[in-house]
Image (cartoon, rainbow, N blue to C red; front, side, top):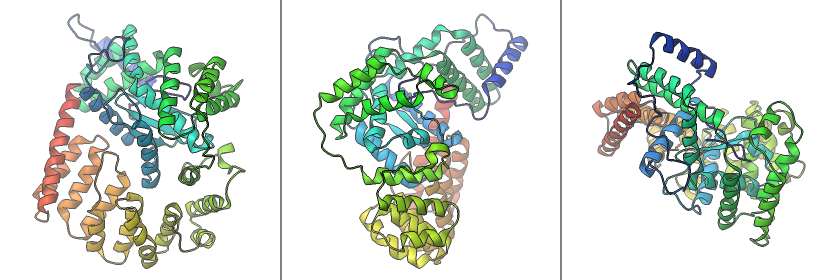
Length: 490
């Protein structure tokens, strides 16, 4: 919840309430409700241990997991997260490949991409790691992007964020007032009150916390080990650091502010280069194909402007063709996109582009012929299942679409788009209970617990619900009630 050379910043969990507005509100509340001596204005109990050994602290891993889940859901509810199932699966796969080699934490990691042109990435409590589209477009290889993720993973595994949040207690006035406002709001609406409290703590951390150079160096060192262990080129870390230094050196405005909060010293770059060299030579110079496709898809979906709108000069003809067709598809020029791509491809990313163009042209049978072999090859891949299920619906084959959708194993980071399609398929198949559950599954992933409970209860009342669906809904209801209770108690 602080900063690194890879732009770590805290998350503004305030749902469109601006900080100036909150400050005015808190001052008003102080006048109307004077602070009594017995009023406890301490930070919520998820604030962390004294700065020191990473293994020492009052917060349990279970509590940190609860915080991470809550933060993840708040981000998905309020930030411009890219929920494209292909991009989501790709960034999770990359992050999980790296985090599997991190030590010191039993917590899960969550990886999200946000539409934001700023070169930025941040990690928060509970292993939530967010990468801006601007940073991804700044990278030239998957190794460079992996270096950023490895650095953020190291901050989490070494518990730098947890320990640094504690220092916010040294400046309690602003945070204390905000917490007072949250306490007062909680008397009428526990969830609204908690949102104010959480937002206040996040803003306080944003204003006051800066990782020490020692923490940054440790994150570089541990990140390099993670990077190399996962099979990536560790020299990508100093290369990207040097690139950032050259990019923003002498810049003004927002970029200059970036440098003030994310100093890139010559010593740090030099140390990273020396440490990376100890891992020996990495001969794999080929740019990983999936990364190149996803970078170009992100360039289109984020509507990149300025230098990020231009395709890199060094790009294979195949990827350049895909990038051009993606832009055409995004502008509704379906026939031209298909003319460039053709009607068939064994490449997953290319096939998805073609399928989405064909869907918009209502050529449903062509989509089925294209995607069925790939769905068998990539079992459970949401990105492929969604357009194939939509094609079945277009052909009036709702039961077949449901059999396809119902095979998917759900996770916390399942695409929100998937639940929208699941709900539509279930309803057209006459499975009203499954349709209600789909909405409930969507809602729990954005922290809308009361709505989750309402929809789950509706699902359980439905006459058209299978035993398996009923059992899954009962489990979902228990999770929502526990999450709601935890939120009220924080």
